[in-house]
Image 1: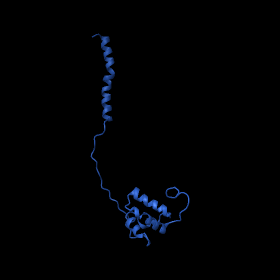
Image 2: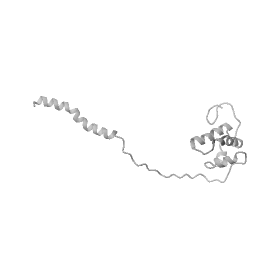
Image 3: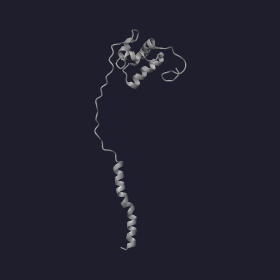
Length: 134
């Protein structure tokens, strides 16, 4: 084979020869990682112990049975005064966002109780809780 023809063949093959290691390395980096075993760790949560219960009133039994599993009565009573609708929104948020096991049919009675012990009159305009009108 003549030298010029051989040089042309080598020059033509050079991109392919150089690309093989590059493609091999690239493929190794783009391949999905091998599955790894999932390790779980146990988490324990200690809720504050409190002997305090909610003040007597219609709905106190719901508050004592449902709210005290996660909150102290003092923590709830230190919240800003809310309208009954705002308390209902807070209860719904506890159920939907945090998984509180409050039965839906107890929401209004609990909101009424919390409003009675720590409420303010409804006002027109946006709520302080969700910034939406009533």
